[in-house]
Image (tube, rainbow, N blue to C red):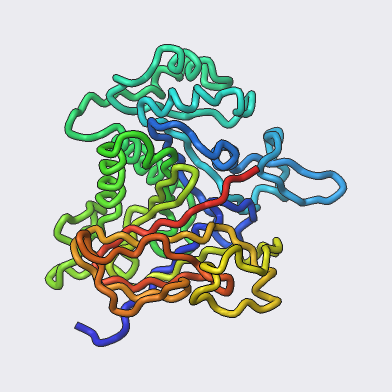
Length: 367
């Protein structure tokens, strides 16, 4: 094997919380709603309404994604704009009940809930009727309630499978600006990690399972359970089926496969001021000195970070956290990196791990 340094996987989840336009390829994602109460409703509505356009007549071509839907067809000079866009909204069985419960907050017309999928044992009749009465759904509504009775997979897994199938179909119609991964959409799963502990553990299990790496020789795109061994080298990125994020409205959680990662935690295009002074003496401990320029750096995400081992003991090296570590062993029953903090001077957190881990960071409640 080559002695060259392994590549660094770049992460930029800031568009999940921000509304900025992206240069180059637009940030497209599928929104999957799980069967847990929807917390941080403003964040949920922000994701739900992504891709909705309005034009301010005195300041063209300013785009605001929280505004009412712009009439179709769009002017030609808008078609090329790259907006953070939810391409599909899928409820995993009882997730439709959760959307129905906050229906008063949803836009009266579009966008709508696109699919309900699962064994449908949790879907309430009033949520089904509301779904079928959505504007624009028409006679095709029943076809968008997809019953999959398979008891060997969860409703979560069925929803993710449908999201990936739809993503692949959409990718066939889009020109690629690069490699095959340019065509892959991320999946944001909302309302995870709430309720019963066994359900939360199942969600983390599926999050990990969905992000397994594939072998470069696996042209079918199937994930390999044996990936990650020296006999089965990985492609440079590893996230062959897109990246997946799990959020309960209070934190964002995703899988870091073994290797090096750089995670952007502040939107480099945002210039919203944040307080320069720490809130407590504890926050000052080990933190970098805050400069005047640091005080103007926006905090897109909150400060609390956890890095949890998934596949046995792991050696961690971090940079950009208040309590950075180097070749630090972490495992269940041993030391765990929880309740760490980002630092005021860090736009990016770097993590190098010898085995797969969960990365979680808290997010602000939008108002």
